[in-house]
Amino acid sequence: MCFWMCALSYSFISVSSRIVGVGVVEGTVYIDGKAAIGRIDDDFVCATIDWWPPEKSFSPLKLRLGGSLQDKVIYDTEEDQHPCIPFAKNTSELFGFTQGCLPMNRWDELNNFFEKSGAKIIFGLNALYGRSIRSDGSAIGAWDYTNAESLIRYTVRNNHTIHGWELGNELSGNGVGTRVAADQYALDTISLQRIVQNIYKEIEPKPLIIAPGGFFDANWFKEFLDKATTSLDVITHHIYNLGPGVDQHLVEKILDPSYLDGEADTFRRLHNIIRTSATSATAWVGEAGGAYNSGHNLVTNAFVFSFWYLDQLGMAAAYDTKTYCRQSFIGGNYGLLNTTTFQPNPDYYSALLWHRLMGRKVLSTSFSGTKKIRAYTHCAKHSKGITILLINLDNSTTIQAKVGFNSSWSFGHKRNIFQLLQVYEREEYHLTAKDGNLHSQKVVLNGNILTVNSSGEIPPLEPLYANSSNPIKVDPFSIVFVHIPDLLLPACM
Image (cartoon, rainbow, N blue to C red; front, side):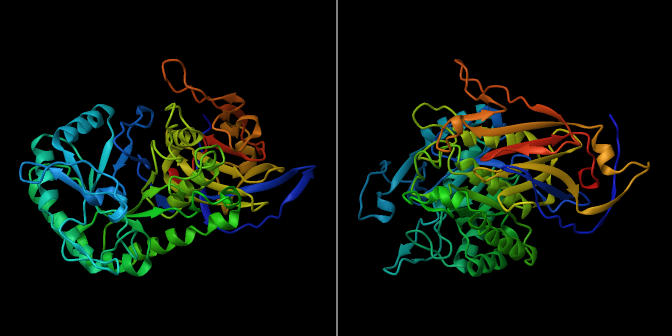
């Protein structure tokens, strides 16, 4: 291996695109390799779940067990004297359901599943217990934590491992169905942290304290963080920026770079609130399905959705988001698995390639040539090199992408960057829709349709190999992961 490193001094380079043939445009991916701009968790890819065991391909995988009805669940512990009655539909009730109950034998069964899978479980606690709801939709009063405390004690007593306890679901800001004021939510979070510290006093590591699991509201989140002080480990927010699943313009939004850029404002503002706060909490996307109300069949469970999903992963990571939980692992029209066949949907393979290739350190990346290319770079996960993610939202233009650096370089020997790239071989993973149909639920990797075998095993995800001095070809409506294992940048050392 030709081992080399580079000393960098930042200088931005702007290069216009060049048309090199019919339907072919040249462009350049610029990477600043001097220092990382963010750092994600090793298990950055996370999924929400509704009582379903995880897929071992992602091990370790965070799974968030929760959702709207978590704030109507009673835990059937010894201390609870109410009859354990399951949910029942009732349109006059909050969220359209009556109060439900979680039996402890079911809780034991779930934890046995989770233990066998090796998943890290985030469990959403009922944050409305003990509160009353006014006619204006606000929930008032302090959280009655006695039932949750009883569940946590039972969990520890039975040696079940929970990675994090999350308080409430979508009660921040204006809320969904109802809302809780930021100052009260902070007090309730402090109560949860005190309970956990007491029950886990002789146990390490202690589970994370996570909240609020709601939609971002800058004023609410700032007040909550300022008043929750050191009680909070993770601040979570939800993303459904594409609107309702019934929207007939979802694909247009997904393929519009300006629309995708809009969500960067949320990440930027939350990042700044955390940075200027005294908190040590980190940011997670606790739930993201793109289009709410179960998504849209053959859109949010089809190849086209990988454009949105991978762009979200890249964007979130660039703003120092540590974990991104996809809604859902299975369920609705936005699951990583097909709800009928349990076969992987295209986003499953997109997430798996991200998980295997994109390392923890995030590098500042831009693309010059066309606005239809989305570009992200991380230090590689299993080498000292880098992995580049390129997403082509154009339906007819092939991009020939060169790799450049927003810096001046100096070396211990007299060879420029392009000469050095000639000695490197890179790995490429090209994802396209089967038959070019964006609504297909089959994805093609390097010309091969990805399908599980008769035993349900995931197929090998094999790369193509290319000389790193050659431009990266990004076909119309395609996604490319490019791993350059021997390109060593200071940020990745």
